[in-house]
Image 1 (spheres, rainbow, N blue to C red):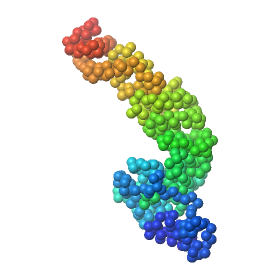
Image 2: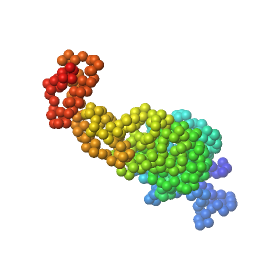
Image 3: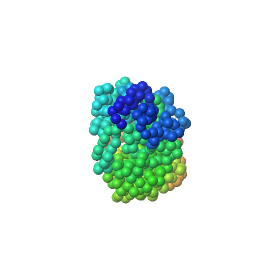
Image 4: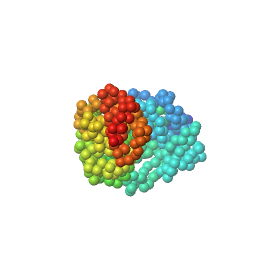
Length: 477
C-alpha cells in the first residue's frame, strides 16, 4: 500500500467508516479510477472487496455489541478512548479475554485492553501516557478521563528462544496480522467502538460450538510458549469446550517443553482452574493424566495423577458441600493426597505457607474425624473448631464416599465450642485463687478439668464455679 492509499484510507476512517469498509472503498477506487486488476473483488458483488478471512462481525444472536448495556464506567471510558484514536485516523479495538467474555454473553467485564495501529510516538503526543515496562513490545498506558488503559500497537512476533518472549517484534498496520500471534481463536477477536466484533480466526464460531483451537499451527503456538498447553486445558475446562483434534495433538507433541516453564506459572494456572470450580479442576486433572503432561510438570512423581483424577471426579460427582466447589484448599488436598512428603511436594509446586498448613491439618486429622466419638472432648473440639474443618469433611467425603456416623457428633462438639470453651479461660484464674501454681502438672490439670466440664455439658448439666473449684482441688492433689 503506497502513501496516497494510506492517506485515502485514513481520511475515510476520520469520516467514521470502519476499517473493512475503508479497504473495500479503496479497492473499488483502484479498479474504477486506476484500472487495477479486479480479480480480488467478489464476483457476486463488484462493490465489495472480500478479504481472505471475512471478519465475523456478529455475536451469537446476530447483533452488534450494545455498549450502552455495560454498567462499568471504565468500559465506557475505554470506548471513548477508541473513538478518540479513530478521530486521529487509526483503528482501535478492545482485545483479549474481555472480548471473549463479552461475546460469550457476560456483562461483568472490567479489564479493558486496547490494540491499535496508532504508533507509540503519536499516542504519546496525543494523550497523557505512562510507561508500564512494555514499550519495547509496543505497550504503554494511556489515560482517558482519569482511567489508565493498556494500549498495544499492532505487531507481529518472531523467535521465542526463551520459550516465552519474542526475540523480534515488528509493527504492522493490520489488525488481522496482529491476531495471528495470539494463542487461541477465542482470544484473538476484537470489538470496535461501534460494537462490531472483528473475528479473522473463527473465534465466535468456536465459542458457539465449544471448540478450543489455536490460531494457526498448534506446534508453533505451543513452541512459542509451552504454558499455552496448560492454558488450553484451563480454557477448555472453564468454558466446557472440546479441544480440537489438531490442537490436542500439538499439546501432546510439545509437552516436553513444559519443563522450561517456571513452576510459579504452572501453579497459577492450576489455582485459577481450582477457583472456577470442582468440575473444571477435575477436567484439568484428567487432561493432565490423559496427555502425560502431569509427568512433565511433576518429574519427581509427587502426584499420583490417576488417584487425583479419581478423587476430583468423585468430588465433582457427589460433593458434601456444593458451596465449596471453588475452594482451592480442597482441590489441593485431593491433588496431593497420598504423596509421601506433602510439604516437599507442595513446596515444589510453590504453594503458599498457608495452603501447606491447611492441607497439613486435613491430612493429619482425616483419621481423627472418622473416629470423632473416640476422642476426648478437648481433642474433638480442637479438630472441629479449626477453620479448615469443613474442608476436612469435604476431602473425607471425596476419599471415602461418606460423611460417616461421626458426623452426627459435630453438632454436639459445636455446642461445646459455644458454651464450654468460653469458660475455659476462667479455670486458670480459679487455680490461682486456690493456690495452684504453674508447674509440671499445671497443663494436665487444666485439660482434665476442661474435659470433665465438657462431659457435664454433654449430659445437659452446666457446671457451676463451685463444681469447677472442686474438680481443680481433686486433680491438683
